[in-house]
Length: 173
Image 1 (cartoon, one colour):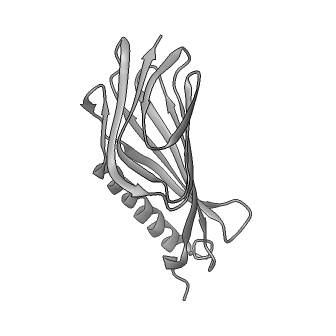
Image 2 (tube, helix red, strand yellow):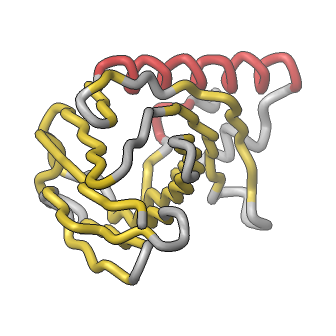
């Protein structure tokens, strides 16, 4: 019998788009190796149950985090989840769309998060895109990163320690 126990995460990718009015939109994608093609062979009802489980699991992870914009708590919410394949049956990917809203102010703004520290099980890559005319003034993270104007690209390698307190400080010009 095919089980999900043999499914292995192999990569994570995320894209954040932040609007001038404080809306954060995230597309989170995990790539997997599924040697038994468990996801591919799910019947519709079981597929929908699996989506619901993945949706609720991610929402639970988000609720375990502390997220703040300018010192006020914000509450990320899963808006969508799906399992897809990119032409290879043993390499599914799962996507989540996550949103939240914070109140921005003139001058310096801060996004802060606190999560449990952990070692990455796979490589990851994250891009944050802020509104045009945003200056990134400070980044506190254990991940590697580069700043390209109003964008920040983060990445981490398997076994790298991540999490804890992280902050992005930025100014809307």
